[in-house]
Amino acid sequence: MLKATPLKTIHVQLGATLVPFAGWEMPLRYRSELAEHQAVRTRVALFDLSHMGEFLVRGPQAKAFLQKMLSNDAAKLPPGRAQYTFLLNPDGGILDDLILYCLEEELYLLVVNAATTAKDRAWLEAHLPASGVTLEDISEDTVLLALSGPESTAILERLTPTPIADMPYYAVRKAEVAGIPQVLIATTGYTGEWTYELFVRAKYGAALWEAFQAQGVPPAGLAARNTLRLEMGYLLYGTDIDESTTPLEAGVEWAVKLHKEEFIGKAALLRQKAHSLPRRLVGLRSESARALPRNGMPLLNSEGQPIGRITSGSISPVLQCGIALGYVPAEVRLGDTVYFELRGQRWPLTVVKPPFVSSTSLQQRLQARAK
Image (cartoon, rainbow, N blue to C red; front, side):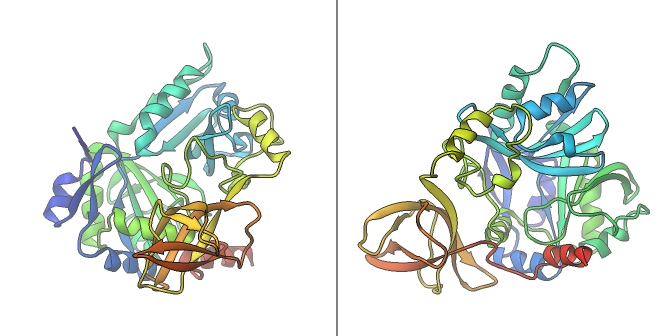
């Protein structure tokens, strides 16, 4: 049976189209995915992400355990900050991509993908040391909302006495929000716009959602979330990356710290790095909105021979053309042309470097902080 988030009744009342996703019944859209996409890019919208998994890792050996299990450098993470990282198998394949939050010394939060929650928990538990660290799965008692868009700070400031405008990217702090205590606010997100992800006990989830509704924040579903993340070139687990791909092939080596002490998958990545990569993930842009690249389509060279495949493809609501991510041979360069076939016709795609969309509120905020 499909799981339902604690907010399902609200989604039904709002007219959401509910669909199966990663074992959950989730809102795909409420009005139109285009309207929801544009709301995030131009103003603000609210997502229910309660299908995601959450683990607490605590104890005097928590940091050492995470250093062994994850690709990024947990030792560099002070309390109140977060990092993007990978859980790898011994071959360097990606078991999951996730966010690690350092809440306190000896207390961490791992946010994992919905489809991999059980697998991730089993893998982590299988590697727990005999003492010094515990892992607690709090997924069932956690509601996760994402307030995303240029107006997100102004709206959240109306609901909390805690200062949030000074929070840097990938930060986390506790606050009271809409009278609800102990809300965990994180400046992480998946849309390319400035986002606050809010973690709260399940019993407070509906009240928190309704507080944002009272501020006029419209809801948004998974369809808009997908086109938003694709415009930024963000990876989707199970589509762009999985156990058959490594972070090096996927172009996210920045989240792998090969200089740190031993971690699972390190030796395999070092071997791969010492040789030429056979393939890599690239951005692909079409100048047409008539024929759209779609997930799973083969990529062809100028002679019509298969050379790779599209992993994620759709129309860009902002650019009004087709965009995609796909694996191509490593010798393919930026500016090269590859092709996909639709209805018996070959359509060109230009190899580009994501993000496809610029001047988002996230980029503007990061640029302002850098000055």
